[in-house]
Amino acid sequence: MTETDMITARSLSRSFKTKSGPVEAVRGIDLDVRPGEIVGLLGPNGAGKTTTLRMLTTLLMPSSGTATVAGHDLVREPRDVRRRIGYVSQVGAPPSAGTIVGEELVTQARLQGLSKADATTRLSEVAPRLSLGGLERRALLELSGGQRRRFDIALGLMHSPQLVFLDEPTTGLDPQSRANLWDHIRSLRDDSGVTILLTTHYLDEADALADRVLVMDDGKIVADDTPDALKARISGDVITLAFGVAGELARAESVARTAVPVREVVVTDSALLVTVDEGAVAVAPILRALDFAGLSPSSITVNRPTLDDVFLTLTGRSLREGAEGDSAA
Ligand SMILES: Nc1ncnc2c1ncn2[C@@H]1O[C@H](COP(=O)(O)OP(=O)(O)OP(=O)(O)O)[C@@H](O)[C@H]1O
Ligand SMILES: [Mg+2]
Image 1 (tube, rainbow, N blue to C red):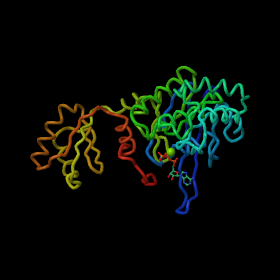
Image 2: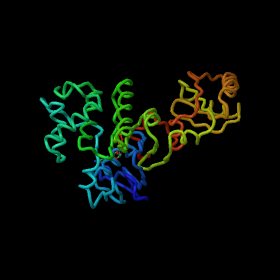
Image 3: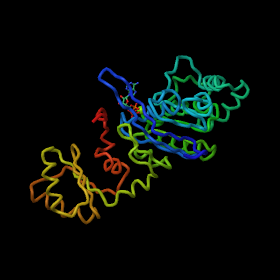
Image 4: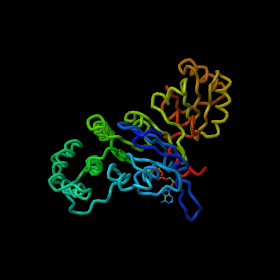
């Protein structure tokens, strides 16, 4: 724990009482974010990402644990924390009819204590930064999905926070709008030195945007490293063999194990993931052995390790398959 950290959290936990019993949404996580970092909190649905962000932004009291955010204690000095941070929630606030982009941004700044003149000046800085220049007089309801998300982020930036929390900033956007938003997020850090903690369940997003990735699963942080270092932990290539018939997977696993020296085999609902030293060398003998056993995969791919493989190795599940609902397992 150093004085200069932008976020320091220790054993931060949050549980909820529900009708079906207590839910341990966040189970004692430690977190350190340095000034100027872009940190990605990566995890499947229900991992505890939003709960973590809501605690760090003072919107939700921790059940236990401590945190210092932007130099202030989360529980004892929530107002000081709030003044220094921006928060863009997973679902933007619903726009009321007649809300005008520029007016809403100025109102937000004034709520944060800026004078009218300062708020207007700030609007002229923030709008072009998020390519909203020229849209100030438009109604919020008229914006496209990508424009709307850029507006949500602008709203969180009007009071010039040093630290911004973005909850799934690009979910629901088309690939082009996502890449565009990544550029905007990067420039916040590169040009203005803003520290950014964002959540995502997109591996490519964490890979492209984050200096450091915290992998979260079932309320815990299971890995914390740069995307490259995480991938380097997994040596070897992964051969993915998909089977249309679920019953063939178990037989295919034993065939693959005897065909070549394998480092690891993971069986998912529909595929066999075989980790070997060199994919290009191993694929032919595996296929010959499968063919001999009367098994034919519906697809075969050979991949260098990705963040998804990291997640699979850490949790035994694939992030891509979406882990909706099984976080209590
Ligand atoms: N207010 C609440 N009351 C009861 N349970 C809650 C509440 N908020 C969250 N949870 C539960 O806590 C767990 C973590 O939820 P959270 O919203 O933090 O996940 P997430 O990682 O943000 O997921 P997603 O990717 O779907 O947004 C889930 O099991 C969820 O059902
Ligand atoms: Mg969430």
